[in-house]
Length: 194
Image (cartoon, rainbow, N blue to C red; front, side, top):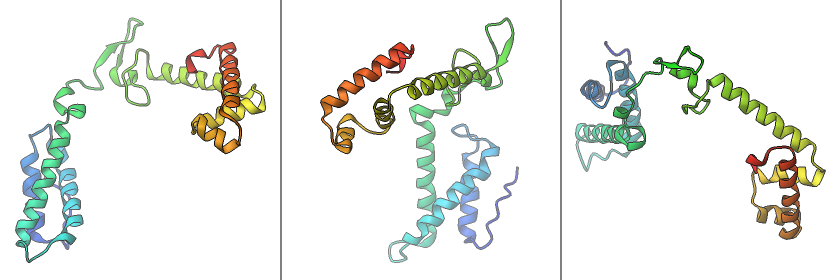
């Protein structure tokens, strides 16, 4: 596959260096030929951003370019091999058929939730459940007295100390309201969300 990246107006040495280095990465660290144009672009963007730091008194331009590209490749490989996203640990396809618990098979991708985590049910079931929980929470919050509703909304973004300062009331008063808020959630069957 020949890269379709255009390097018009770019230093010829830089373009050749980046093409060569991207070609060398193919087959390493899980990179494929399809990744090569993206690698070239990433390397070129990094090089162009760093060229403003070039000082001819310290090194030749070609040496500077080569070091910048090599360092960025090291950074790419370091990220690629990081334990949290090591490409070697992913040995399954999202299209792999899995038993859906109903005697039928469903592709693995249908078991992922909106955050990309593998769950126990299908994506549609989990998303429907999350929507129902959100509706129950909204109903419970709407049925609260004004002062508890206000506290509930504020707790989403602030601590009790911050809320007490903003409202100009003692924290003990807020903790009494919080206790009432918890009781209201328990009565609504939402104790798991306290």
